[in-house]
Image (cartoon, rainbow, N blue to C red; front, side):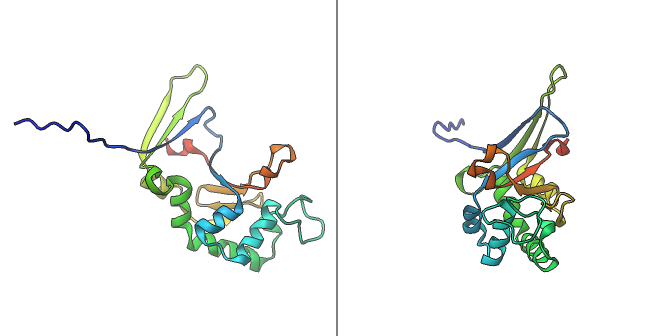
Length: 179
């Protein structure tokens, strides 16, 4: 007996990272703060701190390292603790959203392709849940004044020659750590 499936499809969504430098970082998510506020139900006090961090609000301290924004290590210890506690408590949701996504386009797989000029192509394919577990970990301030969520860096986007989009929040990883 033979059974034929003529109209059945299995669709697998995949996150692909093409890398040309094994020690480089790759953006995994970038949005405006208001979008993250809605996504993660960020409380107003945390949102305000993040607004100072990305530069939506001017620094509230004297002599900041950058006159356009504040680094997280320029906040007082209570404010730093609020941020760390929020991202620690919400880490599973945040990592799922920035690595996997939601809805019908959520990724089930994560593919990293390393292409260095004349060298042979190198690649690795992993289930997305394994990738989320790999990148998760302790939430802490980085030496540069950004936030580390495990092996993920949260930072102000910056760059963009002074355009407004420099004030977006972005998350970055080194995909080659999966090799």
